[in-house]
Amino acid sequence: MSVAIREQKKVGADVQIKNLYKVYGDIYAANNVSLDIESGKFITLLGPSGSGKTTVLMSIAGFVEPTQGDIQVDGKSIVNKPPHLRNIGMVFQNYALFPHMTVYENIAFPLKMRKFEKNVINEKVSDVLEMVKLSGYESRKINQLSGGQQQRIALARAVVFNPPLLLMDEPLGALDRKLREHMQLELVKIQKALGITVIYVTHDQEEALVMSDSIAILDHGNLLQEGPPSEVYDRPVNHFVADFLGESNFLHGKIDAVQGEDVFITLSAGQKIEATLRGNLQNGEPVRCVIRPESMKVKSKADDNEMHITGTIKEVIYLGDSIKYVLKISEDEEINVKVLNPSAQEQFAVGDTVQVVYKKENMLALAE
Amino acid sequence: MKVARIIYYIICGLIFAFIAFPIAIVFPLSFSEVSYLQFPPETLSLRWFEDFFSDPEWVRSILLSLRVGATTALFSTILGVLAATGLNRAEIKGKEYLMGYLISPLIVPLVVMAVGIYGLFAPWGLVGTPLGISLSHTVRALPYVIINVSAAYQTLDRNLEWAARNLGANPLETFRRITFPLIKPGIIGGAFFAFIVSYDEIVLSLFLSGVDATTLPIKMWEGIRMEMTPIIAAASSIIIMVYIILFAIYELSKIRKKDKQVEQNN
Image 1 (cartoon, rainbow over the protein chains, first blue to last red):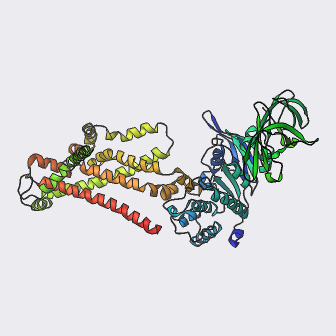
Image 2 (cartoon, rainbow over the protein chains, first blue to last red; image 1 turned 135 degrees about the vertical axis):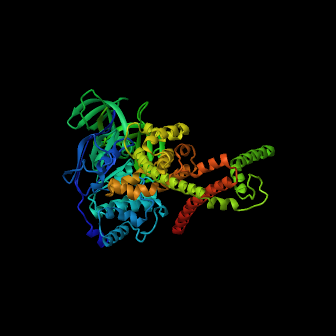
């Protein structure tokens, strides 16, 4: 880490979004969204198109006026401040680099607006170019840069004036896969070095899992769940979240009994299973259980203390580092099981009858 | 199908010839020696150009046309940029109708407009003045500027202005540093159009001209009715040459810009 970065270390802002609404006619682009973001954290707003994530981001930036609600940065409300006075860094989806200016002029722009002196500007520009590994690019024109380089210049321009908060709107979307994966790690590295708070928008759940300290999942303007990646992945609060992140199996059934967190369920084809309760459910209610393919095992015979479901192998899909079994557990229900390190385990073929072994804490009972 | 090809070329050729015909006639005519319109000219001379530039009335008219053209370009560019900015950036209900209204001078019959403007300007003492002519030309030229600048706005990425605002530029600074440089080609194109519309304009000018305010097209029109000498052709040739020079400047400036970019890319 260069000396320049250490000297620039700024404390990131605390951000609070309080009951944010944005209504267009009948449509709730943002429906009572509330979030508490700690200083220095990397939080991702994750969701499909139209989920409201960009609406929330643009409200923070000041380009969308909330219908109702408040946004506070370091305890002070910013909703009445025009965008040019909010002192927030932003990286747009298509970078929005000024085409009629050089790299230097682009990066110097926010400093010029803040009336910094020429020699200070020179120093800050070259420091930030070093940080994004593009030293010496000052006099290049924007149209001479590759996509990845433009992306890094956009980032440099957004952080050169040391804002306490950085907003990013799907900044890696236009990059090819390898570069994107590399940049994901680079961005997090830079963020941690600067100590800046980052609010990141994406529809790519893998990206969110890799980069974030916390993920907030949105759908149709509603905030469904917020928490660290492991929590949102292992303990999804409803089907949308379970389905959106990673792969899920859904099993339909009816509740026989509820004891605290344990639920006893009869599946539609008659199998009896045990699950963990996630939601308000009563006896007799229909239920959908969620379990991830990688949290189950396939065995020819289950041990006495292991919970299991009987199934027949319908398909075997070899994925290199894993094998995916598609199993029929009833007339019209199938589940997927992903087995890692397949060569070290029993292998099965199409048509075999097997036991799918699972753990209660991975079988989540969610309301239908 | 070779025959179809040939017919196609002939038709295209005829169309091109038809379009170029007036210009092709006028140029040689202006160099003719004799004092009547003889085509093709038998002997060549520059006497008509000499006559043109030594006649104070002709010279005055061409100077007036240049002056009115420049004034029209100035007025319509300023108003046009303001209008286009409002139409493309402000939240106004019924924007399309407003745009239609501002562009209507393109479809309103010129004579109708001229009579109306005459009736309005007469009591104000603007008839027969260069200012009066410039103002009427501005109305006629404004739609061209609005269309040109609006087109520039359409191709301008909105995110660039948002980025500038986000980075600390207030709306005025954003316009000055980001929007204006990027719509400049549209503005210049609009200004050129406005000048050409004015320089060429006869209907409005006829209604609003006076003894002290005679534009070149009017002088030519009077000339044709009274004396059919090749001096008219000389005047036409001068107009054509002015246009050629203007377009040459415009195109050359675009080429130089491209060369600069190529240099920097290497």
